Image (cartoon, rainbow, N blue to C red; front, side, top):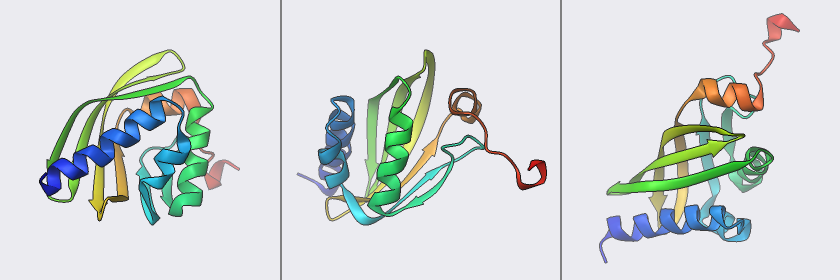
Length: 131
């Protein structure tokens, strides 16, 4: 099995585990120092470092009726792109999630998706000037 095929299997296993509620398996696929970047101005937007922060972020996302399904996985070296269908709180969207995988563990994730949808569903962050 090639490096790309192995990396795709890691990411596929993560999506399957998340869909079934198996958070222990999901977390086992992350490097201890994983970095997760979620763009936008929603209350879940930000950059998360380490399994603790990423676990808290995933738990917050799961508070809404969330379903994420990878429809296509594309790999090049240590990069895997997951094209996904998202359903959250009755709204639907498509995302591209970019993973960096090293030694069988995800070390970085960057989400490219509908930031306005995330703001509608999860709310927006208050700016410092508005406080």
